[in-house]
Amino acid sequence: MGGSASPYGNVVLITGGNSGIGRATAEAFAARGFTVYAASRTPRPAVETFPGGGSIHPLVMDVTSDDSVVQAVATAVVAEAGPIGILVHSAGIGISGAAVDMPIEAAHEQLETNYFGVLRVNSAVIPGMMRAGRGLVVIVSSVAAFFPIPFQSHYASSKAALEVYGRSLAMEVASHGIRVALVQPGDTKTEFTAHRRSANVPSSPFYEVCETSVAKMKHDEETGRSPAVAARRIVALATSARPPSRNVVGADYQALLLASRLLPVRLIDRVLRGMYMKPRAGDVG
Image (cartoon, rainbow, N blue to C red):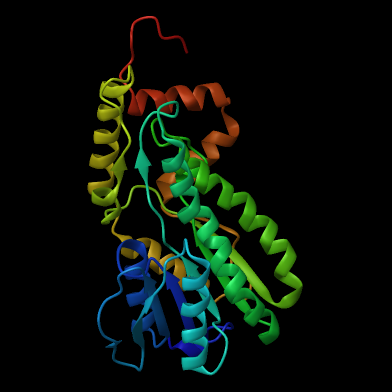
């Protein structure tokens, strides 16, 4: 598939494009002939070219900075002498810890990157898409948006916020030829696991159970899917004039999501607690 096979053009901007799902997606697009701008705070040093004419261009961008986002998007638009046709939001951070112990600054930091970062980049890119009358915005969310995980409450909240925002945005921009798709990966083997920070407090009554819970999540991620799986789904969306708005990655997670719609919330939460927390005497379901 060449870049021309996409109804949105062949210019792609990916945030968080230096690692994980973002990097895998950049490679997948470039291998199919797209021109990719891989944005991150510390991008790779040189342009990479691929057989068939695809390329990955490093782009410095801090999604928490208005000036950085505006400058980076302008650089890409000037280089291409035209608007970005496909935008993939893959930048994100995680800070684990008990909900009641999480410093407000850490909660703000997660939302600033995972949620407000998406808004900043969209504000810089979507007007150009509107002028062109076409565009695709892909937001990498998470199954955590549907399944709140203990000691990841603020990360999960940021992803849940993206779900509602993305659906609202899709309704607003559809008449301008712009489509919005949310992609929800589950456990994925990426650098995100090693980069997750901890706000766990040794003096907290939650300390030990939090450590155990995060260790379980770390194991699940390190033995999870390759980021290439999510990347393939994202690239496939770029060939569709009407991409699905929700794209849960993996038949197992699709089945879990279906089950969550049919079963009581109390039961789903009990299952999640059993997965990530050791039961204690006196606990009630």
